[in-house]
Image 1 (tube, rainbow, N blue to C red):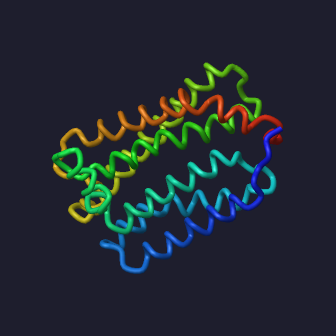
Image 2 (cartoon, rainbow, N blue to C red):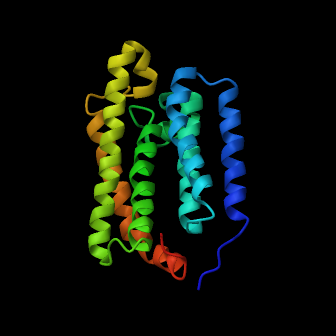
Length: 207
């Protein structure tokens, strides 16, 4: 039976909260910051409310924390201006800041693994192959809903939504976002499934 670290979730929570507070001091654009960090804040509340009844694997907690940090950093600078993205742009001689691509890769990677944990520990499905298929579908649904939110933001805010959209002039930005989410979800199922299974072994089922 795997041993879960009793302190790891607390350490990750403090790290994410510290990053959240730092990012909110003087973000590049306050509205964009709110829209970008809101999903991370909602997930923190949900995880806190369900921690005792349904604790997750350490692997999933780490990945959720990393995803939250990606969102928070993007909210602080806006995705098109994140320094890490400029470094990657120079390193690979890209035409644009690719940090938002990382965000959408994580948008597929983490929700797919979260869906896998819920489906398997809840006993909703037993076959690993079908679980992988459904988890990828869930991740793609999350990606599609996020693209719809971006569309609604563009309609509501007009040019004020430019920082949130972060298309950087790419007419295929939406398609790239969803494709990267697909790659992220597929990679999670392909490379982390066995590790995830070992961590879930012996953990309580969802009631």
